[in-house]
Length: 370
Image (cartoon, rainbow, N blue to C red; front, side, top):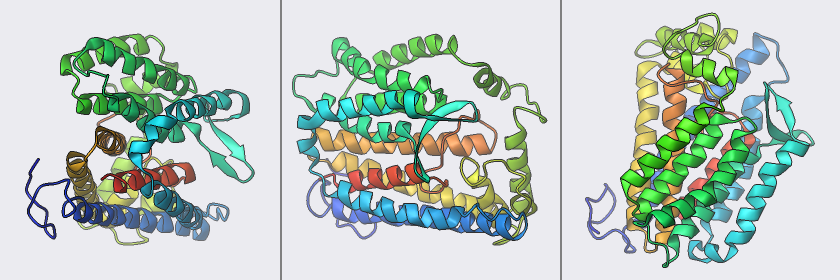
């Protein structure tokens, strides 16, 4: 399968030795730009919280550096994996995934109306994030088997049966965004394996109809807020983020400047709404640069998936691409007010140990594609 080479890559057929290696360097280069913007914004948020708001315990930048160190270890470990050896461990990996998700109901701590975290000493572990990477591996292995025909509805339904227990356990936490992420991974990998679009669409429509009857009150409110804005309630976060972007203009207020970031007026600005800190400090120019870096990273991931020499490797690369792209679209859309607030982090930028470590591990899986 041939394609146009990126700068620095010799023209040729992707999948040979002169293809994936330069592509991997491009992925890491784009990822570095995104990560750097995230760290700069977290430094600004920490600075303002300590110096102005006197919240001396909010060391989000310092902790993120520690999480990055752990994530680097996860990246190196995943990069060294032989992806084609994964299928023999699927029963164990799938079992671990379900046990992790079930454990949250017995050991989890409730925060903001949801039970998604397990406290391990001073650290918090979020099983639903690990579920994404384990699910990518197990579903990729499902479709890598030679006896699975993606054109057959029975095989597609078999993949759905593999998916629904994971998605349901996350949905019950409740975590609508996390459950949706699992379904997006399922759709992307299943389509990449060769399934018919009409099968995917019909199943998705059916699942949405069922899920809509199970939504909690605040989840419905967030969806309704998209068409009936309530500035004092359901869209407060997005309104404050919009003010931050307006303050930033084209070139931004400048590093460590911006009233919304300095005053801490944007809720969860270090996590779900970190993109608003980019917009306020670095303006439309900085926000566009971050978008370009994300798009470049995703495009080169797609080329790596196309270059893969085995179905397992291709499926893994597509699964990582699918979930990271979904997170990016949902998060940035949420911040600028075009999608509901669903609590999904921005890859490599949002503060959080589990999220950053999982992102680094996913990058390692893409680097492991041969």
